[in-house]
Length: 437
Image 1 (tube, one colour):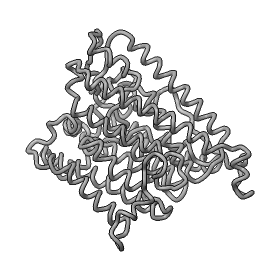
Image 2 (image 1 turned 60 degrees about the horizontal axis):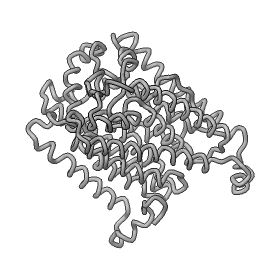
Image 3 (image 1 turned 60 degrees about the vertical axis):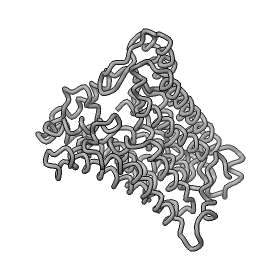
Image 4 (image 1 turned 135 degrees about the vertical axis):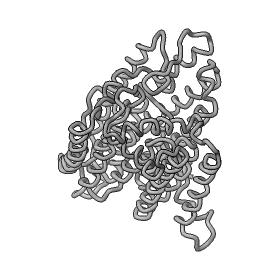
């Protein structure tokens, strides 16, 4: 077994002779998706569950969106303007019927789930690593039905497509589209080769995002109302910084849980301190990425490895950490695993454990959040501890794998050794964590 407990390249021993690896993983993908979706699709009102509740929000916003404006006066609207598209598309055939809208939305997400799978299969076939496709196949059912009731799988599909794109122009354009939908894909620019690669991908992303944002601002009222809502958000109960406070609630802490700005937040003593920790952690993470960029030599797996590390840092330092955020990490980890020379295999193993614990806390133990239950507080704390460990480990392994010193130079042909033009670059960001958007 290789490091981290993942055994991707040895799967041939478990397959019948003559059966290609992609057929085995494809059958597994079908079975796991049927297991997740069949109970929900058989329900008369499948949108009335905790993990599918956001689809009710999307349906409620449809009349406003079809009028050519955004529901900026609704505190739950926390999305960039491009997010309206995956919300509107399922309604083209639903014609206001909630059951058909639910089925259409789930169908759209399932198609993008399949797109990610096919991208990973293709990338794995080129590089000789089957781990990426297998990882994605199991990560989604470990997170559960919530994956098909949010817009995060389509955004992750854009991110994975950008990471496996044949060049920085297409990759940057896909990053731009993803940023228009949910903000965080902008972090993928971190791992492009400097200078030409970064400038090319960055300009492509800027062109797509800029033109889309400009069109939305000019023609669609309320396009940037989400920014004001984001600024007002507090500390979500599932955030990493909230875990110590959440553990005190079963012991009688005066902390309360209130629904504000589209999520359940902690309100009470020491919340401001936790928010300050988030800000300091984001600054520290940004400085680490900058230092890693400054000393690093670029190599093919760095793009995905750096993207995963950057997104994990943003996740653990964010004041908001919803269950569906694990979809992003799962997609990026799967992209890393399409290469044999990735540095992130043990990190991916930890992320699978985080996916399991995430489904345990939501929706299985979720009611305990309101009842001051100790079980859910412990599960959230353990999940967040593992996620923090995965982030630190990702950073350490990225640092080591991109070392630009004598050992790395000696192991490469002279033409491939680190030079000023082959160093990586990382984009800069403002004070607002991209995950908060």
